[in-house]
Length: 201
Image 1 (spheres, one colour):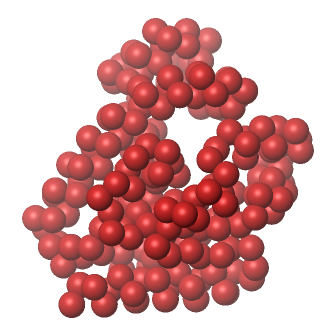
Image 2 (spheres, rainbow, N blue to C red):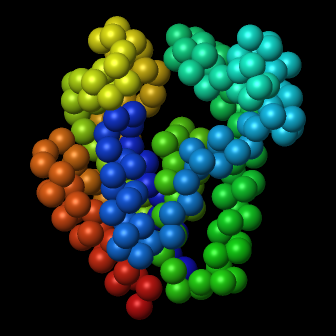
């Protein structure tokens, strides 16, 4: 089994690359989906979030209001760190469980850990390969503002709240530049997949 990390920055196009790799035959472990699951109402992480951030981060049905919580943490890095310390251990535990299951059921598979904060959370440690989906910061900000319908100021805040994309390059074994045509991105993603496939022998 080959396990590689997939990361990027906000609005770099990681989801597009993840879809291409899935279609090519990789098994994707989506950390964002897991993070949404572990904070569901009455789960341990949910209780910790409500205790620290208060009931104002809840929707009327009691689930976490992700937009409201996002606005809080993007404006305050210390609160972002607190949230990550609550959520990350649960995500890491679930990822480990899934890897174990896949190892038993599909030992020859290529597993991609799709994790936005792969490097920041230290989840790149022990991985032979880290795939970085790259786009320059100015393109990130422009895409984010257009995608989410937010102001340039909010877009800058969100991009600035993450580790700079240029710094992430140092941790990558593969870089997929997604600043150009989508066809070029897909072609490069398939090249990366083929490189990983060769390692399965």
